[in-house]
Image (cartoon, rainbow over all chains, first blue to last red; front, side, top):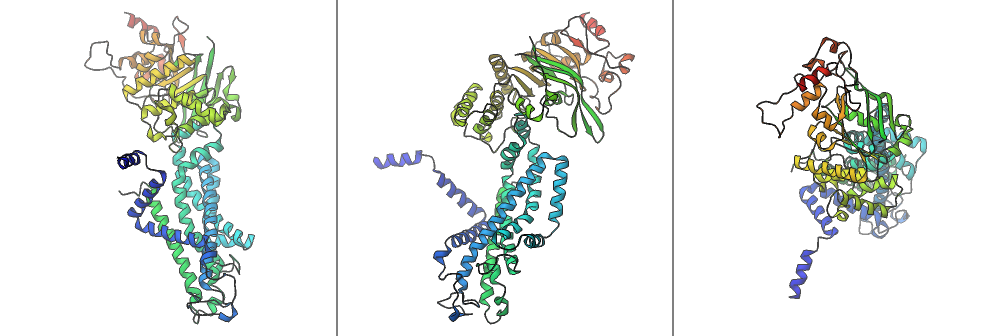
Length: 299
Length: 331
């Protein structure tokens, strides 16, 4: 009797919030397995990046001149570099750098871009024209060229690299978000907000911005992979993160080039890490776009 | 009764690729305290633009208020700064839009949309604003208002959304509500409910109302006074009773004849108004209705007839041949 009552109670209470989240995750996995793989890669990378101190067998900065250029073994799973630093530990710590730069740059770039895009669409007319032409000028430079220019002005280092990657992303996000915001601007609820006596800033931030969340998220996830690749490129060119910080792009340069034939593990593993991370973010980003864009929804 | 809102010789135009459109061309009307005034006309006659002009929400830079005065409680709204105008919008004059399905923001909760105006215009804190929101939803007849606050517009039906729009309009105790085709997008049965609600609330709260509509049935039942618009001008102005009992303009007469009535024997055909409304970029020099008018004389094509009275100061018509029309109807 007691059991029956308990069961009834359990059935009567609505599903808790967590169960709904779980259900949504399961649905996403079933409908978009590739996206789920991407998400899994991102998740692993995030966990590794967050708990690098505990996962890495060695300190990423600790040099060991007794084990320089050691081949992969039980002691050093992925070998060591020219200073005897453990490649496995440096790849692990490198994921943290990649995540910080990737997330930081994408969030700053996409958010500023979304703000500019929505404001440009809202005000329209001459303001829109001028803003969009400035965005066109910025967009005409390839990502890496503009990033190089920004680094040349600001200098190297993690913060400057984040800015250098974020700035070229602003116009790309602004353009996409603006096109969505143009449709939102014509919605009667925006007129209604004006008729209610709200300020322009409030209408842009509180009424229009939440309505362009879908393109914003899509651009954000698309930027993540690009940002990680761009950070690696800048670091590889010596214009990004500086030694001795563990960063994948950095690990590919210098001694790794010199000893590419005798100690290929120095370049192969960070290279794999870069590819895997970009692959994961792109898979997830594509699936997210498909899931959020009703025009591409087939089922 | 004193005039709450007095529009004098309002002129609003839009510049388009095919020329300047005089959407509102020298229109004057007023709304007195607590009364319901209707602005009637077919699509594109300038009735919505009149309301948007009052709110100063005509889409710039294409649209422009070129002249006239809009006196609200003695102040000319056209002379206010943007900042001052913001305090009039929503606080003193509220607006209800045509499309309840798209006039509510889909990503904000019902509660948020109701309390936002209260927090901004009435400087209310969150708690009292919530209480007021519940009261408002109850007032417009939405059951279980406390639970509804957390819901989103897509949880609401069309009729409920229009009730919600009315609640939003009433939130800050405005003295005037501009309702732009408030029932066009709704089912006929819901239309009657919404109009009854509007009328009842405006009477109880003493709010004056301007109803913009093309539906003469709505006018007959809910309006105290009526302004009939054609091609950007007012062509007849009268109390609702006079307009129906004694139409003095051929266009009004045509409109009334083109509506089927339940209290008359069924005719085989309704009498439509022949022709099309004029192109606003190329208005004729005389009366804009002349090409479609059965009472037309030579003079109609030469000069625009002014609004004039045939006796009663409250009943004005803009027709050169109004006497002939009235006499014929009497005969």
